Amino acid sequence: MGILLCCFQIPEYNDESLNVPRIRAFTNPITNNFSPKLEQIFQSLEREEISTVADEEDVCPTCFYEYIDENPKIVLQCGHIFHLACIYEWMERSEVCPFCSKTMLFLEGEEITQQVE
Image (cartoon, rainbow, N blue to C red; front, side, top):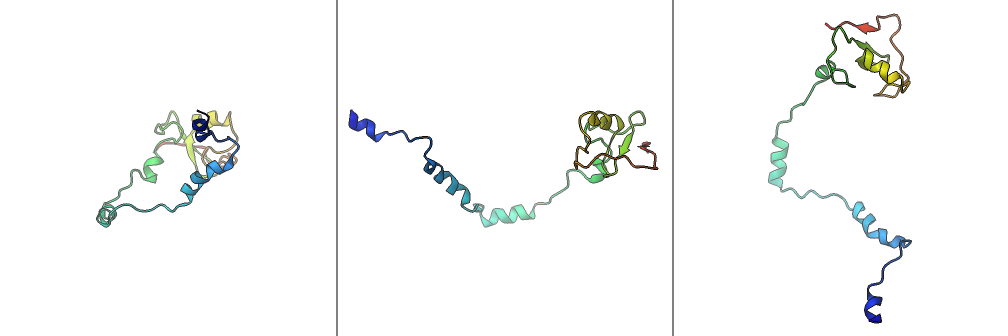
């Protein structure tokens, strides 16, 4: 029975050589297993945009509601647009824009809130 147990030796956890096969697996280049016919089909498919920038500007990126007169939009100096209420709530937690992490500054000399057109 002693001979049988020595064959099933459990490796030590400190042995770094155990990780070598896993690391080698990540260094191999990814190969394309698609047939040339499938490649032609994929390239010939028409691609369409899911949304455009104009569509995205009609809603607040934090709450996804449209801008209305009761909840107007505000433009930061970085150019990002939010609901006035949403950005005030964000300002309680952070001093930077939620998108670009620049310090939040409001446009000076202009009307802060823009009426919905």
